[in-house]
Amino acid sequence: MSHETNVIRHPVTGSVGVSAEGQAKACISDPSYRLVRMHALGDVLREHRRSRPEMIAVVDGEVRLSWKELDSRVNRLAHALAAKGVEQGERVLWLGQNSFRIIETLLAAAKLGAVFCPANWRMSGNELARVVEDFDPRVVIWQQEEVEGACIEARNQCQANRHWLCHDQSGDGGYEALLDAESDADIDQLVVPELPVLAVYTAAFEGLPNAALLPHSTVLFQSLTMAYGDSVNEETVFLNSGPLFHLGTLMSLLSTFLFGGRNVFIRRMEVHQLLSLIQSEGVTHALIPQPTVEQIREVNATGAYDVSSLWATPDAREWVSPRVIPADAPFMKHMSGYGQTEVMGLCVLGWCGGTGAGRPSPMIQVRIVDDEGQEVEPGVVGEIVIRGSLVMAGYFNRSEENAFRSRGGWHHTNDLGKRLEDGSIVFVGPKTTMIKSGVENIYPVEVENCLRSHPAIENVCVIGVPDPTWSQNVRAVVVLKEGHQASEQSLIEHCREHIASYKKPKDVVFVNELPLTKLGLVDREAVDAAHGGGGYPSAG
Image: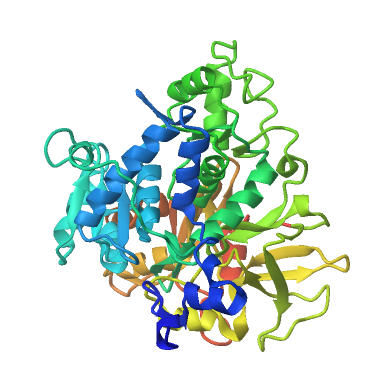
C-alpha cells in the first residue's frame, strides 16, 4: 500500500492526518489486527442485540422496543438515510422535542459514519434557518406538533435542496412509512472511532452559534466515565425529561444506552405524566429542574404516585440537583465539577478527588495558562486548557476558530480557573459572561445583537439578574438614539420575534449612557454593579 493511501482527509473538518489503517500499521506488528480493534457507537448496539435481545431498550408512550427491535429499526432508518445521500461525513439534523426516534437517528447516523445534531427546537424560525444553513444537513427530521410553525418558516428561508422528513406524520411520506419500506439487514460498514458522530450547538461567538463535533471515541469514553459517577448499569431506567439538545440529558441517555439500561422518553415536562412514568417504569435516574420539582411536591404531597424508585419520599424532599441519581452514586457524594460542551460535559469531577471543582477525568490533561500559553503556578488565575480523548474534533466549518482554540496543541476553553496546591482545579468564571436561566445558557452578545437591530437603539448591555427560581433573568440596559422612542414591551417583543423566547429580556432599563472601559468597550462589571447584575454561574 502506498504512503498516499495512509493519509486521510477528515470528511467533516477537512483536516489531514494518517488514516486508521495507516496508524494501525505503525502501531501493530501483525497487520491482520488492523480492523479487529475498530469499535464505534453502532457496534455497541450490535452487541446489545446479541447480549440483551429481549430486554427493553426504549419506552415512549405506547412504544416499547427490545434491543433486537431497536436495532432492526435503526438498520431500516440507516438504509433510508443512505438512499437520501447520507454517507460518511454527511449530516442529519433533528428539529423536534424528545422522542425515541432521536436515539434511532443517532444510531443510524453512527452506523453510516455520519453526524447527528439535535437542535434546540425552542429557537425561532429565523434561528432554525441559520442552523440549517450552517450545518448543511442532507436530511432534516422535523416535528409537526408544537414545532411546525418554526420548522416551516426555517424551511421556506433555506435555499439548498434538502430532504425534510416529518417524524410525527402518519401515512405516506412520514418517518414510519419510510422505515417500513426498507430492509432491516445490518449496515455492513466499519466506522473509524475518531470520526465525529454527534454535533451539539454551543457558545454564540460574536452572535454566531457553533456546532461542536464529538467523535465516537469521545462519546464512548465520556459515557463510561459518567456511568461510573451516576451509578448506571443495565438495570438503570433513565427518564429523558430534560431537553435532548442539551448534554445534561443527552449524556445520561448515552450512558444508559452504553450499559444496556432502559431509556424512557417524555416529549416535554408535564408533571402528571412525569409522575405516572416514574411509577409505571420504576425510573431510577432523571433530569428534573427545581420548578418541576416544586410542582411534584404540590401534586404528590399525599403520595398518590409511587416514586420510591427515584426518591425516598413522595414529595421528593431530598432533591438537591436536577440530575436525580441514586443517593450512593459517586456524583451525589461529591457534586462539584467543571466542563463544557466542547469536552462533552463534565471533565473535572469532584468524585475524582481533591477540592474546588475536583480533579480531571482520567481521560484528559488540564493546564492553567497565561495569555502567552505558559503554565502558571498554583493559586494564579489563568485560562483552562485541556488535552485528551474527551475534547471535541473541532467546530463544524470554523477553521479559523478551530486553529485559534487548539493553538499549542491544547483546547483553549475560554474559561478562567486556577489550580490549588493539592492539584485540584477551581473554575473562576467564563472569559465572556454567560447568563444561566433555568437549564438554558444565554449569551449576552446574541441578545445584544438582536436589540441593536432595532432602529431606536444606540447602545445596549445585557446582564444577568439573580432570580431565586431560575438562577438568573435577562435584563437589558439600553441607550436610545437621539430623537427616537421605544417602550420596554416593544423591545421585549422585538427579541421575541427574532430569537428564542427564553433569551428575551424580562425587563429593560433605559439610561442616558453606558459606562466604558479604558479601551472604549462597555464595562459590564460597572453595569452589573449599577443595575443589579450578578449570580453568574460558577463552580469549585
